[in-house]
Length: 117
Image (cartoon, rainbow, N blue to C red; front, side, top):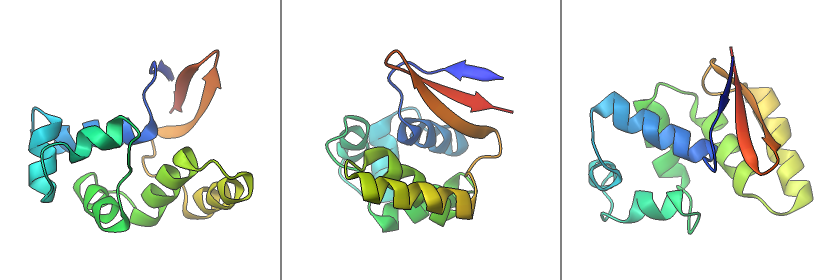
């Protein structure tokens, strides 16, 4: 199955999974749940920052995922340096994908498409 997710990052998917798992309605509620100011999760969505390892571990626990894989997926997506991006891609292969439903993603014409099983 392929899902088209216009302009959604993998972090957006994890944030939405967290909110669903915790039955929260807003990013602000998730920020407060994680112990941050109201705008933190919104800053992650806007690409102004990304979760530190502590937050990534918290997110991984909420969505029942391997934190190493989650950190690697987030870092790979946000990394601009080619060598570092390749490093994170190798770690993703080593640790496996976070959610067994998400096999990968591809950017087609500016649209991020997730490949699911």
